[in-house]
Amino acid sequence: MKFFKKKTTTKTFDDFPPIGGLMVSKMVVDKKIKPRFMYREKRIRPEDSGWRIFTGMETDAYLDDPQNSGIYNPSTILAIDPSIETILLKGIGSVYERAGDQSDWYKVTDYKLEDDFMVTHRLTEKWTIQINNLFERKIEDSGDLLYTTGDKSVRLTIWNDANKNKEQLYQEHNNLINNRDQNKAATVNIFDFSDATVFRTGYLIKESDGSKSYDVIYGFSIIDNQVIQIALYFDEPQDQDWAITTWKNIRLLS
Image (cartoon, rainbow, N blue to C red; front, side):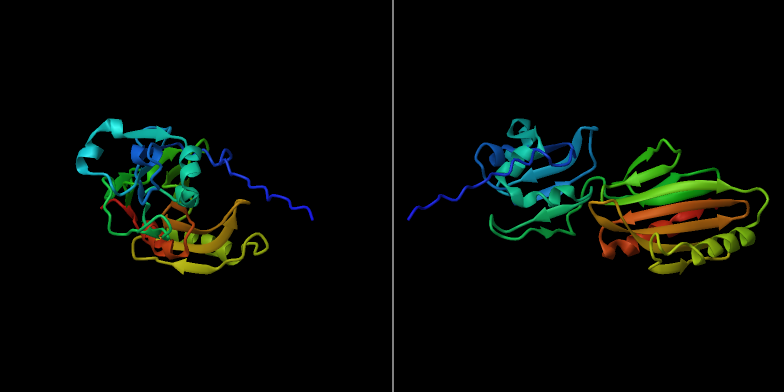
């Protein structure tokens, strides 16, 4: 009887998405101690992922020495600990910890990051938005304003129509919502958060980019002659409250 040795394949992670470099304690790299604590802060340069990864054994004196950490490609660290593969795709503001090498990772909710605070940005001469400072802001080629952490995003477009008041625009957008093509994406929910000053109407659907599915709320904040369209993208269903609050945080200047 002939026996065959089972072949083992080592994953290289060379095809891991280009998220940028990881700042990692050299205890992980030099001593091959697996990480037990990691967080993703706002990046300090375009090639930076924002991830900071530690074993949990570092002293304050160790961390204070810049020679004790380095910038590494994700594939280098994933070769040491593949368990963080999914976590590395989480967005800015994510904090994860585990008790031991074989323990499950869990999300930490009470660790305060330096940039984790609310800010108010002026959108136009009439509008502001209040949003967490962890969101990165940029103007897209289309002219839309985008805020993103990676797993949560906000896209804003402003439409002007000098010939219609807010009641007309509100009715027009409600008709669009109620009569939209359900074959493209079924409406999951319809929202109305109108008040005496701003009419707000919108809807929730599920979309997919081919690799993952996510929720999207399309909302419209309406005044005379103007509509701000907001698209709020989020990976986790529990982030729906964040999306609605962010939409409501688009306000007229008083």
